[in-house]
Structure formats: C-alpha cells, structure tokens
Length: 359
Image (tube, rainbow, N blue to C red; front, side, top):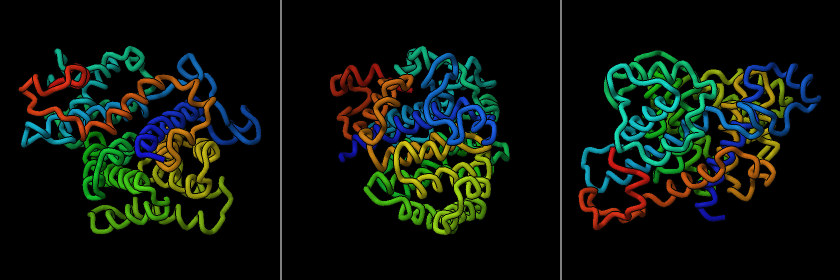
C-alpha cells in the first residue's frame, strides 16, 4: 500500500464514519437498536436529505487540510508563515459557508477564497457545533487560541489531516494541539487533538495502533493538564485487553461529547475490531456523539488500511467523494510542489495558484 492510498483512506473513511453516524448522533443505543435492528445501524440512512451525507466533522477536516496545504505553499516565501495560521484562515472561510462571520472582520472574503470555498455543497449547514462557531466568531486575531474552557470534541474531530501532513511526531503533536486549540480552550480539548494527530502520523508509517497510542501517551506525559486524555487512552487499552463487552466498554469510556472520550472510544473500537466496516460500525453504535467517534475511528482505519480497505458501496454513495479525494491528493503532494517564490508567477503552476491562492 502506498502513502497516497493512506491519505485518501484517512479522509474518505473519516467521511464515511461521519456519514454513517450523523443520522443517529442524538439517539441512545437502545433507540438505535429499536430503529435499525439488534445489531444497530450498519449502513447509510437519510441525513440532510440524502444517504451518505457528511456533517460538519468532514467539512471542518477538509478546511483543516486546505489550511495546511496553503501553509505549505507559503513556507517557501514567508519566513514567519505558520501552518496553524493558514488553518485559522481556512476555518474562517468555513464559518462563512455556515452563514456566519467573525465579529471583528477576520472572515472577510476577496479573491483569495480558493476552490474549496466555491464547492456549493459545503455551504450547507449540517448541525455545526456551537463552540466552534462561537470561538471563530469571537476571535480577535487569526490563529488565536480559544478563550473558552471547552473540552468538547469539536477540536479533535478535525485534526486527522495534521497527522497526515506532519513529517515528525513532534510536528504532528504540535499541529494537532494548535488546530484544536483555536476553538477549544481547555487542555483536554486541545491535547486530545495532539494525541489524535500523532496516532495518524504513526499509523501512516505502517505501525500498528498500540504503537501509535504509546507514541501519543509519550507526547502527553510531560504536558500540563494531560491527565484526562492520558487516563482515557489508557482505559481504552485496558478495556480492549480485558475483553470487556463492547457496549459496556464504550459506556465506561463515555459518550464522546468530550474530546478525550471521543478519542478513547475511537481508539478502543479500532483496537477491538481493526477491520472495516466492523470497526466503524462499532464506533457509531452507542449513546453519544456517533458521527464524531465514527469519523475518528474511520480516519484511523483509513490510514491503516488505505482507500482500498473501504467497502465500495460506502464509497460510491459518499457525498463529495471526488472533492475529498482531491483534497487528500493535494495534501499528499503539496510538500513536493515546486512553487518557487510566491511573487514569481513564472515559477508557480497556474492551477495550483488558482486552487490555493495567497491568503
């Protein structure tokens, strides 16, 4: 399996898990089983008017990737450019797609909107999280860490692209933390983002999930406020080793509304069932935030198994499959694009400049 397949697999399977979980996000496990049968929901059902529709989890992950791609292009000419800065601008573009804007004028648009913003389907509101919207609306500077104390999962659910993009564990952890911290100000909220990104980076290298979790735990160990994230991941590993019943194990890990709970549920489900589709199915059938845990489990499975590991019927009906694939390919290739100095148009591919213009 080549790395491009892992990049595609991560973003596509993350979107699949999101689309599977979104219709049952606010349903209890008992209600899910009553509605869809004793084994729970196992295939797409209608959400946002169609089967296979994505929610804000995938929308924001795509804008995370776009910000990193733009950051990579600017690194060639802007010494002070940072990836998280460009991701922050991308999140402001996402906010505009939701019909809202920053209270301090940070999300104004001009010719720099780029191709992703112009994808009309991304302008559909899919129950966007209040914390993410409030933090982006109230930010007074691009890239500012959120001033709230939220531990919600809205930060960690969108950072898988950081793990794909990063070249080292250290860079991955820092990027994951920075991206999550832009909307979620509690250490549990943004340290979970760092841990998720590290797990994706390690899996991208062909390692197994236990090794990826160990690497994440090592990154967390000396960080102030790491205790909840560390305890959640350690419990996920312990429950898997003990062979506790799936439903009981997930109930012990939480409901996924909080960042460390969502991270632990996704990790547990992939540890327990390192298979697609069963790992994703396990991750969406519980009492809590099914699309967040489904998206995160899908991202982990996708980077492990590649695009070819995703069942064809799920891929065929996935909303924006071509867009997601194109973003994944650009994220995979962008570090090698020979763009030269951004001011020298003779050294920049016209198509790249049109897709990812200067911010």
